[in-house]
Amino acid sequence: MSLAPIFDILLITALLLVSWRLLGNSDLFQAAVLFISFGLFLSLAWVRLQAPDIALAEAAVGAGLTGALLFATLKIVEPKQGRSKNGAQPKSCRLDRAAECPGRMHYILASIFVLGLAGLLLTAVFSLPDTANGLAGLTSGFLAQSGVEHPVTAVLLNFRLYDTWLELGVLLLALLGVLGTRDRLGPQNVTAAQPPNPVLSWLVRGLAPFMLLATVYLLWLGDHAPGGAFQAGVVLAATLVLLWLAGLGSVVRMPRHAWLFSLVAGFSAMLVLALCTTLAPDAVALAYPQSWAKALILLLESVATISIGVILASLTVLVLAGEGEANGAGAAETDGKNGM
Amino acid sequence: MQTFYLGVAAFLLLTMVVGLIRIFRGPRQEDRLMAMQLFGTTGVAVLLLLAAAFDASSMRNAALIFAVLAVLAVAAYARGPNRREKEIK
Amino acid sequence: MTTFHLYSFAAMLLAALGVYGLITRRHLLRKVMALNIIAGGAFLLLISTAYRNQGAFPDPVPHAMVLTGIVVAISATGFALALIQRIQKQLGQRPDQEAGDENPDQTETSRSGP
Amino acid sequence: MHILAVLLCLAGAFFFLAGTAGLLRFPDSPSRLHALTKADNLGLGLIVLALVVTSSSLAVALKVILVWLLALAASTSICFLLGQSMLRQDQRQDQ
Image (cartoon, rainbow over all chains, first blue to last red; front, side, top):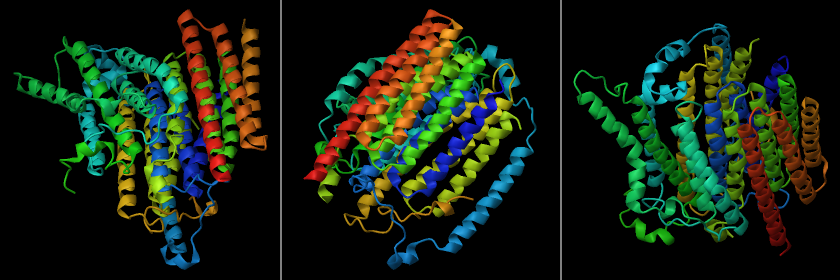
């Protein structure tokens, strides 16, 4: 296996080169494309480091959702970019606005700070021992009691369930934040600005069943192999966004009650579980009885998948639709707009 | 055979690194997206090869998702001008 | 130099590069990307430690943390981008405003790294 | 069996190399798009074939083929979308 270091060095070169150019060059569109490539190289790194769970999630997030979010925002924030045939001319700091440019001092100070930081991190990284066991031993010791066979799922849905629970809360908060920047209360009736491309609709019509199947498959895999609620949820979100882009039914056509229900389902399911486990005699919060573990985990995972998928899809669709349509098709929705 | 697969994967990774030049140079936005699309396909090939080398079937699932979801970014790009853009013009 | 050291070294460089970008780049979109690069560095460090801590399987706890981290990062990015769109709207239709809507980043790549 | 897989793999790698070379060397965007669509689909196809030949089970072989088919459909549509977007911009600029 003497080829592995070559692979590693190439991968690391690619990661560093991409992030360098991403922050350094002047064309924002190029930066967006590089950012997607960054996600791609990262997921190769996850595979190399034997973290297939993360590679699955990164494949959907890095290659799909992030790219869509960035391109949509670029279209709104920099509408003139990409218009010209030869690409946007890079703009440097103009002389008449020199005061606005970060001065040389700014760069020198930043460099000193970052070099110091890098030095500290370097000593920290190289003082780490070559071998350690971490929590791998502990996890494998208790794996039999967790109700599932896949260690990552056991950690997420059993040993550190509160992490997963609060993480769903963070997702909900992010969606609330996005809704706060919009004059609407949900993604209902947000339409794609242009009539959808027929080829895209045709493709998505073909792909969507596969993707939904993949969602269920990943969810089912979760208890014995890499897969589970997060990966399935992210794939579901990407599928829903793709459906919206193709002008087919998606989160925008969900009935409002169903939409709200699927948003909070994951979080509240775990809340109910927390309440039940706390109120039961001689029980620890969020520690469920071993005999029920497998069924409970499967139930929680299914609910969490739907929540993650719908929250992320709504968030992405809202960002993709931009501000422009607040007075358009969704006008009826804006009656009770939140006071800003 | 494992070493061979790993070698081919490393070679494909090398072509990706070289292909980055097209993203740097452009000049058109579509050129950059084309390079990205080539990266996506090459990435799928690398994932499949690594899955064979490490004998890990979950990597094939990652390759599957990779193959399909590359469409998402390009579809978002090709969505056509939106309302705000027309206003500015 | 083990695989663990190689990747954690790269993770460290990525994080430092991201911090530098976060400080010196002025465009908000690029700041968001810089934040994501920092996150990528942190994830890479965690996963390389997981790769080191191998028993029967790589340490699953960092894996679980990064998995939640990726999903949190994408939702935070979505929120940040929505905020940027809002800032753009608030600044009005004048495309020559200072904050979010122009791109006064430096052209020289020579200055863009530690 | 192994020799066949090795040959297929090498051929696939060659097509990826050709695709990258075309992407870098061809003078204009449409011809680059043309080169790309051929090269990457063929390259992936050959590598998939090599993996099918050496695969341990039928399920693995079928999954690898499924990946190839999905990648084929996706990349064809991506190339169509990109070509259309280029055409639209050119027309807008000619006006």
